[in-house]
Length: 253
Figure 1: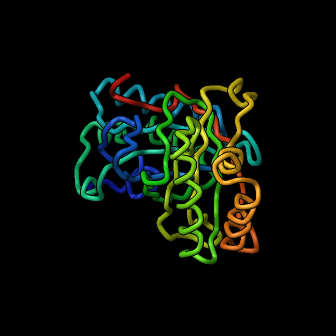
Figure 2 (figure 1 turned 60 degrees about the horizontal axis):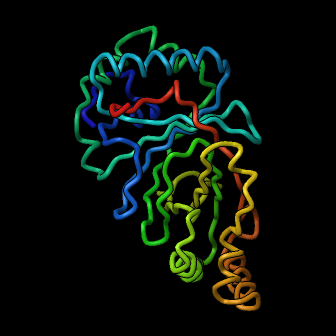
């Protein structure tokens, strides 16, 4: 991106200002996500700032879509701001509408002054492992730290091959994370739910589908190999996130 204003030096502004297509998923191709992990001091004030930014983009025909997700478990002051972009060249592009909105002191201060900390990570979708979920408002992130990369890819590739072969409608989306900070996940998978009620559904899950496809004994062998390829310390953890529609923006809405 060519944003020259000092106010856009912060990583959250970088992620929110990327000019990109709508957030709707394209399961046939890989794409990238810029994810701002924000920890807040004052949630209502931050929400108001994000809503003002979203409204400003709508008034200025903004093209940089993004969604905002609040953590349901763990640290409830944590939000994820997610922006999709199709190629890295988009970072060289300007976004006049976003620049104009960030130039508004009230909007800028409403967002940044109410954040305790933030960090940005980047991830790439892996369509060969992923499903085709859409119209969801609750997601679970299954985060993995990997010790044996080749083994992990081999076993997950085999497992997801069986899941795709079964045409499982709830197959997760998989993302490879760009290397970053200490303790960061190396990959994550996203399970999708239309709403909270959908979390009560009796789904077989990936394990159930795998057992149906290869039997319990082979399924257990694959799960053991999967676990062995993860880091011993914090190799896996799960987060549940809830969409905050008023804080995000899509030019198609």
